[in-house]
Image 1 (cartoon, one colour):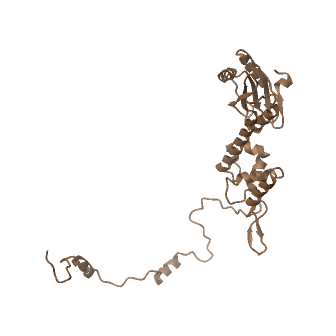
Image 2 (cartoon, rainbow, N blue to C red):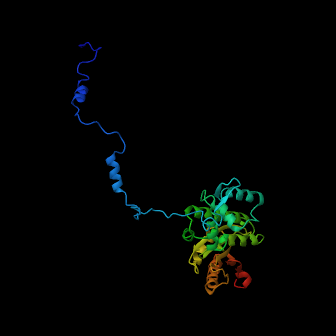
Image 3 (spheres, rainbow, N blue to C red):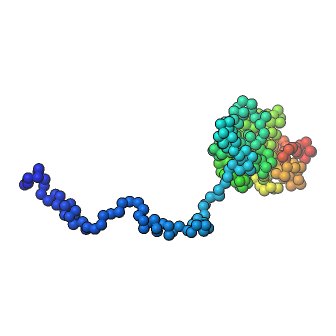
Amino acid sequence: MGHNDDKGRRPGFFEPLVEFVTRRPKGPPRRPEGFAEDGLAELDARLPPPGAPTEPAAQPGYRPTDRLRPEAAAGGGLVTDEDGTRRPHYWGHRERLRTRFLTGGHAPMPEYELLELLLFNAIPRIDVKPLAKRLLATFGDLPGVIAASEHRILQVEGADRWVYLQLRLAEAMAHRLGQARVLNRDVIATWDHLISYCRTAMAHRETEQFRILFLDRKNRLIADEAQAAGTVDHVPVYPREVARRALELTASAIILVHNHPSGDPTPGEEDIAMTRRVADACRAIEVGVHDHVVIGKDTEVSFREWGYL
């Protein structure tokens, strides 16, 4: 390889760069970055005249809400500390409420505070007391809120699917606790617990539900199954399906349970006729029908006690 006198540089290596630099078109130097006088004049021309009404090119896609207005913040708004600092009234409220619950239990707490504790898991950082009170006002009481359908929960301002999830979890826990008290136990000895369990599962539902409690030869509860769900005043029941399921579980007896969303547990003519059809189907396979209980909001009716069985 040939070498020249420039410390071993290969000939022609920098020539293109040199040629580019020497051929760069000459002209006035570039302006420094920033506004020039003509740019400021153009900007002034784009501004509306003083006092002219303006509006955004596009409306925002959200609805602004002042969370500290009295009706949104449960009447608390801003409070002033001893040092003069103003803060939202609910700062520290969650920790105070949790401490009260853990130290004093749930008995002295109103329903809206218990609901607040539940909503803490669904909605972070903001005051959930207004939502808790709206839910209670809509559904009447805490059991009514817990049992409400997703469609109706989402109609309450501030409620979302995470709120609905927490309510369903609370309902599931209540059902499991009630079921644990009666499953595989003598239903005669635990009748009060059984009725309490049925009330927890059904009393506040917005539609009728039909359940069957399957018993073994010792009158112990071996299964509790929801057979059908219906409308606000009707639920379809098929006696042959009831009998078939009793055979599958080798049950010796059953107890029928259904609710009246109206709150009045008085049996209707259809209830009486359906019970007799189920009893006839079960009699053919030697399965007894101990009772049919109609659950209302505040009380219940036993077909056995009323002389219908």
